[in-house]
Length: 71
Image 1: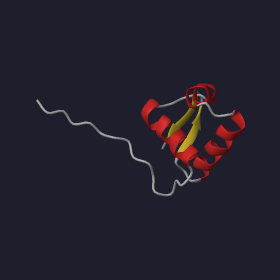
Image 2 (image 1 turned 45 degrees about the vertical axis):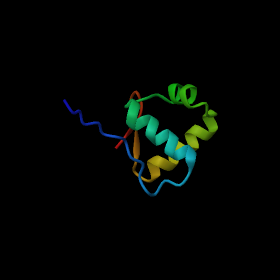
Image 3 (image 1 turned 30 degrees about the horizontal axis):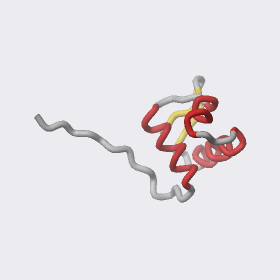
Image 4 (image 1 turned 30 degrees about the vertical axis):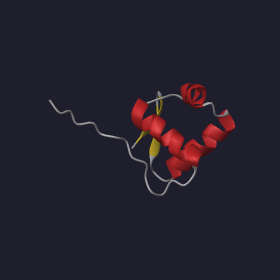
């Protein structure tokens, strides 16, 4: 039986490797808090928040009560 798997894609407007990494982590992991993202990705909080702010400005992620999620 053949199974169909969807592979997450990265929007073309993302050039930064860190932005792509954070975006994919949210696409795959769903809603995630900043501390969990920081631990999982090994980014400093300063870098992580800059990337999240950039992704939010591009309307690719949004902040929720439990962290961040892709739109």
